[in-house]
Length: 396
View (cartoon, rainbow, N blue to C red):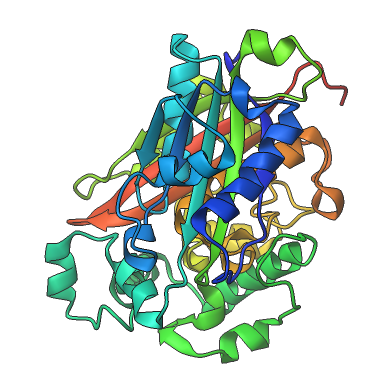
């Protein structure tokens, strides 16, 4: 039995909210999470707050957690500020689980908040490009205020190696983007919900061949929050716990037989006592459509080189064998960097509670989230894989 549980979740809509502060966005998500858990702020014993981009987009260089929590009435508790690029709030969740499992805290708040829209467009790009090491950024010779080094350099190189080895049609990537937009249409908090077709995706602006604009995640503002408690606390009240069965965090390594996602997925699955065959639903880091396809293979949902066949078969659709990105994913739900990891967890919590409405996956019992971010030297800088399980006491 897991010893840490998610008992409350809260999520803002994702989009452009230039008239709202970090504290206002975080406050909406945190208030919703506490209400969902049936708790008051005074019951929280520690908080982990994730943010990666505010120093550039808002000028809040440090103490983001304290700055957003004090106006909400929090005081005295230990607050830890977490920056791990796009994997920030997933990393914060890992630390919260450790705090609960060690007995240091019985109720822990985890929040991710981001304002990626700056006063000028260049702020957004400068913030995003700060998620690679400076030597790599300099060598890439991009315009750091008008281009994303990830979309112009990091992702195309990775995609090019894959295509050279296995082959991959642009149409397959477009189909993934269309699938995710269809899921987002059922998600009231998604940033983009208007229907799109494969032709729309293929006809949108080419970013770096074969990637088009509609295959890429947008710039987003937003916040997410969860309340994590100990097993005893989760069982002592009228709560709807979702159990954190396994979680693993890691950084990149020199090129080898396995990617960082594959390595940490194996660790998370071992901790949870599952195999890829046990997964009922997944949320993965589709910052571009290709990254979703690659995640199919890295998580063991499809063999190496078979991600395209997995997608084309409909296996990752809502009615498929393993629905992926039922929230709409980063491509359509939106990607407010430090809030993204918990947004994945919140979607999977809804699925395991059977509260996902039109997005609901039938009889979902085991879920996995894959979240990754940044780039250092030659690989992803930070990645987290989390395995969640439905409450054993909940009827099927």
